[in-house]
Image 1 (cartoon, one colour):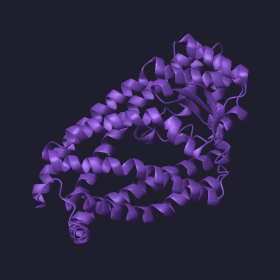
Image 2: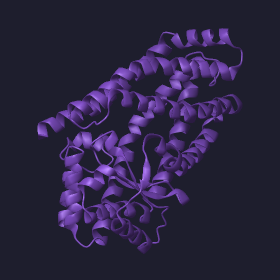
Image 3: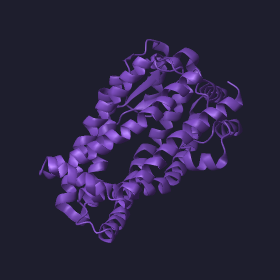
Image 4: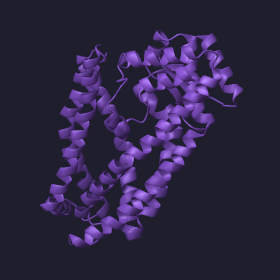
Length: 364
């Protein structure tokens, strides 16, 4: 693929979803400004007087409306674009099945969280942000623990890697740094895309190495080991735990600030309490703004950790050319924009650009 095509592909993959999210953001503002949320609140309470059921109906209306707007955008970004640039191996039927699976999984995960969230709003009032922050941290930790064995297999088939030499070398690498893993598995990424991916998944006893079949087909053993030396660096340098602590702080701070602003706006707009259904879209608006403002900070920290993991990998492997070769192949297979706009990279990239990572490795 030519560089101009790659640039165009990445512009569309970035800006179309971003514009969609901005559209929903302004729609939420209009929903509050023109009392649409009040009409919806009156409507759901005409169907039930139970606060929790009314809340779930309120959320369901917004979810269905959002999904109707999101589906054509998702179809264009996740299916049409991938087909146009010859990345996707999926039929439209299989893509829709995946969307249905994702909807079911997200519903099963999200709705219990929402019920607990609304219970906390009702019971804790203005201090809702404290238990919500704790619960989000505990839930995200649990999700990271069970995702490799419960959620990932819904979308991919995982089997042990057959290449005994590769598997043994990866296990030896992990053992050398006292890193216990459950096993080395490959998954059938090729049924969906020509792109490649690999990494460690899970925390605690669920930690495992997962490698896409597309990566196994296109990379030699030394290149794959260099990729996992990088991933091992994240664990040995405790990046996962550091990021969890940083995210915990950012989430708690964000919820605290959001609670203060939300409480002020609830009074300003004449709502009865922070738990009033009609006021909740304002909380979405506040959290959205906070997320946008803190995204560059999170990405800056993430890029720093990526450089540190690269440095660790380069100090572990025997030949840095294997690592450089792996980076170049990943860039080609995944059609990475090796030289993105510096502003775009600063705002939205959680990894340094490939050109910077390759230059860093070459100078090591």
